[in-house]
Length: 585
Image (cartoon, rainbow, N blue to C red):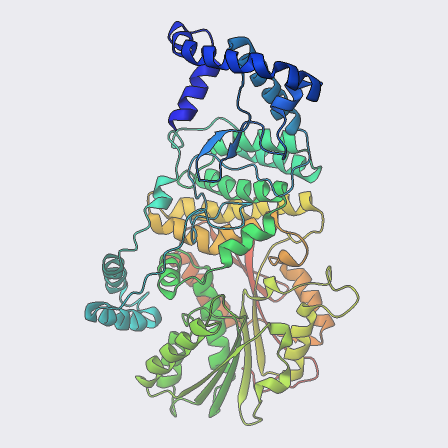
């Protein structure tokens, strides 16, 4: 560091009296040595300046590593005069300017400010292939108090949102203190001044930046990105938060590192406790998931009326939050509960135990159901959904078979990548038709941001996620740190994948409900009419218990949910076209 300071001082003040005085003894020695070697250098190097300045290996024009971890000038200056030093610096600056116009592979236009802007699982930035910090592996042993808290949490996960909200909050706070997992870094990422009114139109800037990225105009895109970063923030208002995540996706796409960035975000499995905290806040504030759970559970309850065996094939995992109401209803029904078999189909989770989370869900459901006298035989299939065949389900004709999927199929690949064969999306629907369920309950994320053209997809994603972040802004205070968690877990990853990734790496591919309707019909499924009693109960609940901007409506036998007129989710029920629906109430 001392050498660096001296060199910098020499370049900036080449004729400073103190510097010249300090150089005099060394100048005499160098001048003596130079007089004896000048002729030899003249004959062996026709261009002495070039020989002195150009190293044997290509290096950074300003600095290089000396191999010991310190950084020192790559091109030492041989002359002690200020003129030679200034000439050398001019040469280096010219090289640096020229380098700016050379192609750059795997180079990222990195964000300023907070080191880890996404603040998910580690310190990975967009475009950086590995963490900027060393990872320390800690072995943690649960204390007796923590074990007891987790037992309470297991019970409250399934039974606490509506009945014991105070106890749920108490357990979550206690576990935070016990494990010391308060996430302060996300609160530190905001820039000063973001709470002030921003005059710049972020939506216009985002579209301009996306257009520059689409035409590979690095310079324009980088300039607009810097402006977006100045006005966006993790802790600002709705548009500033959304702009923060969209900018990250654009930045990674511009650098060609979108796939690596997205994989770094999903590379570590989100713990059950983090999911619980996110879902707890979401379910106590919004109606979307609650409406879907109620719609599905009531449909299943009516389908098994008068029957003794129930088999639920469930695509995806929601840590068991859907099933407590259904278990209680089955336990209380006249004639006693049926025998319940549940098959849960889940993609492998990252890590050494790809089915760990779904196994935890199975244990939780079995323990919960036993308290109500309901027997649940839980079986997990860890595989890609399209790889599961009807034969793998082991269907029993004596069982009422129900297939259930809530918001899971948006990540199935469509025909844009499999034009020469059946798409995974159609493969799953064909498998469901072959199962011939009594009813197939399907809830979809309604969106039109799956277009092949990037700009079309970007605009639709911008407008769609503006609605989601507006809901958060309306319902939850900005200083609520769990709001950040909900936005990261439920929205941010999707935003970044949609913007930054292409091809097979773009897994977020939602369709609108009318497109899903046509796809269902092509797969040989027949849509059932909506149950008027269920629809009436849900409309009354949303109207009486939730914000006036939440909407619930019907269209073409779909139950629609949305915010301020924008449809965000849709629910419907189906059977195989050649199957009888006589046992569906």
